[in-house]
Image (cartoon, rainbow, N blue to C red; front, top):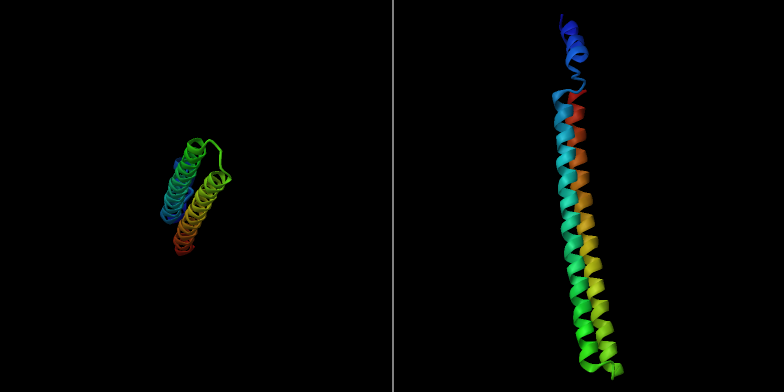
Length: 116
């Protein structure tokens, strides 16, 4: 009788996933959304750092009108520091996003394992 009810459910309603499978899918979706949010946030912040350091470097170049090698070297150093800071931020964000995805996947796998 139970088998007939399940077959009817599958055939009529198309419910081919268990409740735990559905929870696992939601966990994966949420962890993916969180990871995407972290990536977007850190990439935007890194881009802001890059733009800020480039603007500061350009200001130095314009102020000294490239008259001095020292000013150019200082401007280049500011750009390099900004780029390095932005790269570090992106790396940390990517690592955090990867950890969120991995945690979500493990949690989802555990839910699916309980269903087996």
